[in-house]
Amino acid sequence: MIVILKKGAQPEAVARLEEILRAKGVTANHIEGATQNIIGLVGDTSRIDVDSLMVQDCVESIRRVQEPYKQANRKFHPDDTAIPVRDCIIGNGSLQVIAGPCSVETEDQIMKTAIACKKAGATMLRGGAFKPRTSPYSFQGLGKEGLDLLIQARKETGLPIVTEIMNGADLDLFADIDVIQVGARNMQNFELLKALGKSDKPVLLKRGLANTMEELLMSAEYIMAGGNQNIILCERGIRTFETWTRNTLDISAVPLLKQKTHLPICIDPSHAAGIASLVEPLSLSAIVAGADALEIEVHCDPKSALSDASQQLTPEKFESVMSNIRKMADFLGRPMGK
Image (cartoon, rainbow, N blue to C red; front, side, top):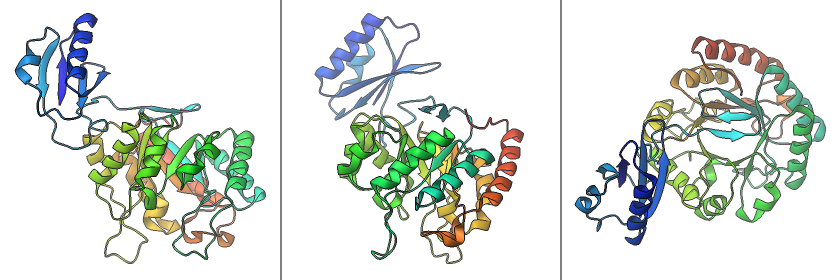
């Protein structure tokens, strides 16, 4: 349920209304928008008498919301959410490009790649320290050592870092990480989502390879219900019957999610296609669709990569891709970076 407040409503009247609502056993979230202020109610609203609320001086109107996700719902929060990450902001109309290797492998590899990404114009650095892999015999990442190398790369380049968490018990290890990524395989790891809800760090939440958009929003709701409102949704392709690509990029997810939620949207073209040559056209499509950020895999020597070699760009190719991304962003009036 959403209570829409009258323009110029007195703070004392709004405070009394919130007290009445809390007495009815629901959580009242007061949200101030650019043109309208509302109170979003979370909990069992079936017993609330709408007429008794309408007589309150500060109430303009009341709407019932059918969707099960409340805090992620644009009806509760009409204005776009902008999430600061050091000197960058995701969701304010600018375009952020998160780039880096699939896995952090060595100090030399991550430093060379980070410097190349920075030079090409990337605004954030990605790299996997903990890697969920389909095969138990594949490279699983460097763990804590990988996190330390990412922090070292940030000191060298100034790029905020994005890296994946797999276990809520490891949350303390991520204290100096800028954005915590939840991979597709963990989108419905609800205990992990609850743990992240107790953190204040931005979370890049990837859609599961066989999950609906509503399920993605419900996973975001788990984190938001714990108190963490800093969620970036990521479309990284879903599994279909197509075999020529690793996954199928659901580009319609960008405009549709923009209608349903106020949270910023990121596109990962690398995992969507699994083919390096498709990263550029998918990235350009994502910008036109309205994505707030791109997450692109880059490796200083993809042929020697310990994971996902076929989808990672060389620094030279990434520089070329970034040139065209910048042209598209300029054409659409989208500033790059800050």
